[in-house]
Image (cartoon, rainbow, N blue to C red; front, side, top):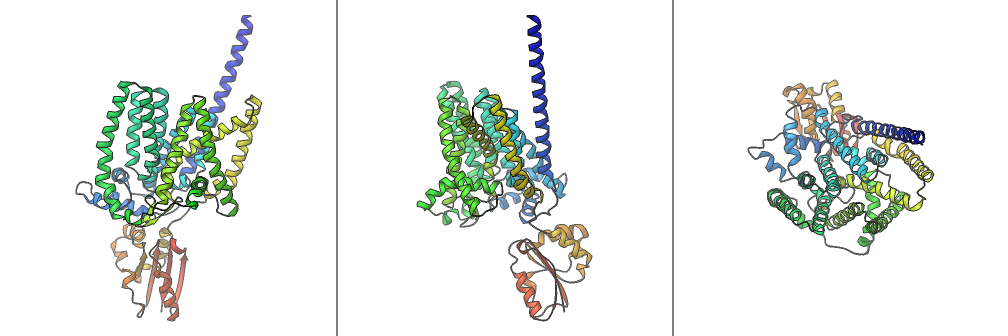
Length: 515
């Protein structure tokens, strides 16, 4: 009898060790893959206009109000520039500038992993990290110096500590949940679509428990957050930015049949945007169908899990749906996602990055719950289903997701232009900077070679096309540079020799013109 017990113990122990080893390998593989995807060719592309603006504002003085006066005419809260002000004091290199987001990404990955592990298992969390690693817009967000990654990190922390607070019922977790929610709002306004549902639902759950002491403490913490953080954010920043960007003037209160139908199909299209799925008739139909299935499945599993008393899964689905509905209406009414005064950027822009942490988590929840609903829960069937899902995901990732991410992207080519300009002794002829070219020129020429190299620099407005110089350079970067093609055509029509070194359209153009 004792021998049988001993043998059963050792078999159980061996199985547990093997399971732990397998899970450790999965964790290691997913971590390496995740870090690789975030950091691959991190400095491949030069800084572009938005990054220069962030760099410029972050370098301004905090004490004399210079930074504040520049932030209130933008679309963002102050936290990113405030933090970056001190980060850039260590180094101003592109690598250091972008490394900040990669480090935030480590926190984001850990939060997503720990959240899903608390809900299910290490294997499910592994799947979540692989999804996050293959999310095109997330990796894009990591590799661009902007406030969005900071917002995604705090939304991830808010999600994790919501789960911890509900599961463990610790006041310290509740305090951190509220604190991170406030930090998310101070990072980027889109965080409100996750933060408001999370905070509202958490307070409702606190009231339902009828713990008088806990209700008083949470109410006090909410009051402090509102008076000490939310009100100042609105009065000092948001209210002024709403006026500056003429949000009221661009608001459109229109809601017809097409808007109603789009409410159900848009989630699939947003998913397609986040994963950079090519847009064509087939994918449009497929993604719209997925959107409808997502809403129906989410509502169904909310009630299923409530009946099972698995309230936490229902909570996360409720937050996701509530956040989506709020986001949908504010975008449709042109209140949120304003690119320029009176012009909505719609759903397919970086203003939708706030979805990423919870979207990955909810995707895993729905995948697992649908799998459990469709198959018998015996060990062999579960293994077969998991293997099938893993193979399908690997195929899609290898064919579609990974190639799109690893080829990287350029939003500017100022580093390439600078090399060509220097190789051809560009300082010997006047150079006319078009569009947003002054930022890249200053970074790659003036700051490297000194002010002497920039002594013959002019703006587009200073060029007299009726009296071209003997030789000149045209250096165009980003939007606002439509005059480049006009100048090149006028020069060619005037019989001048035009050499276009590079023509990347809106991303950048470089030409040399001689008589």
